[in-house]
Image (tube, rainbow over the protein chains, first blue to last red):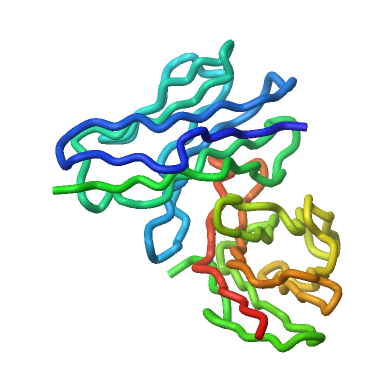
Length: 116
Length: 114
């Protein structure tokens, strides 16, 4: 069975600084997708970024980028130029690529606080 | 606007009662999912459905039931057999095989047992 581990329950960063959230996963599959979701205080889940396992290039979305290390099964999220609105819980998630429509497997989350 | 709606936002249940959480989507997605969120636990899969009239148990299906009679609707019933139902419940949908196959989430329902 696949598992996702987020080892940092809480992280903090100052505005305009950079922070990296860690995620490791365990799988025997070679075809899969990885995601970072943001859950602000409203509790609405928002997709931040996704990475296909077959792509070697790290995904980037504006201030958000990932460091995908497939051999190490590591998938960290870097937030650059942090803003107060980035304060939220962040979840790392895995989805098998072998069958469409399979559910996500989530880590336990990292709560990010941003100070001015 | 296309999206997922969940109702009610807050729900209170007495011991021994069954309650049903509503999830509706107008994204024309084939797949729908129910997740449960507890503090410090992340999201855990309760049930999912890849097509109308078919659904599969997730990791924590005991004490829950679902139906998928219509493509746009996937209600979740929390039965009296669920011993600790107080949690935040999230519904999601996706279009398998689509360009992104991204899961979109509803705003959630907070269930509290009195």
